[in-house]
Length: 183
Image (cartoon, rainbow, N blue to C red; front, side, top):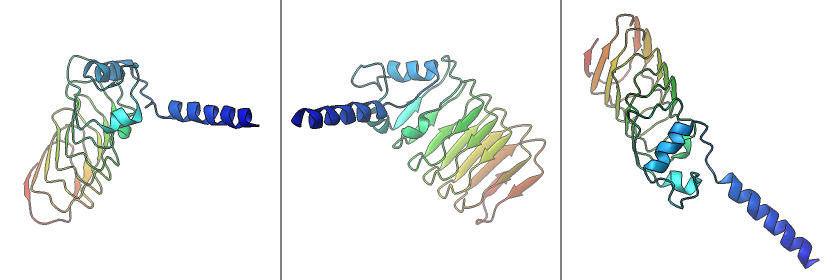
């Protein structure tokens, strides 16, 4: 009877260990994390605990990262720099401690909804869609994009500086206090 209990405990322990590995499908993203020493135990994987220990990530040129799927497991990240990466879609929604985000060079969409600590967002390249709803700490937004047509700052009540260089911008929704704006 004891052997059955030990076998069940061993199986449950093994399954729980596997569940602690962060799924990172992009080999270049995973490789860069390992290069940066984020694989603390050296097993070639990023464990949940290792991801939670990261506060700053510089994922800049020349690493050809196409996807940052798995980034939402980096729950304590404060600064994320993605410049010069061929990433189409960036989803950092719900990263509660993210304070600063530099976008990749060709991101088409950004979902930063619910990033309540985000205060600085920069994207000097093409972006078509952006969601910053609920970014209650956002103070500085600097976006250069010729195709961004609308932006909604719902819940962004602390804006100080908004710079948007877009020839297609036809709608902006902002209900906070007066801030510096350049369109």
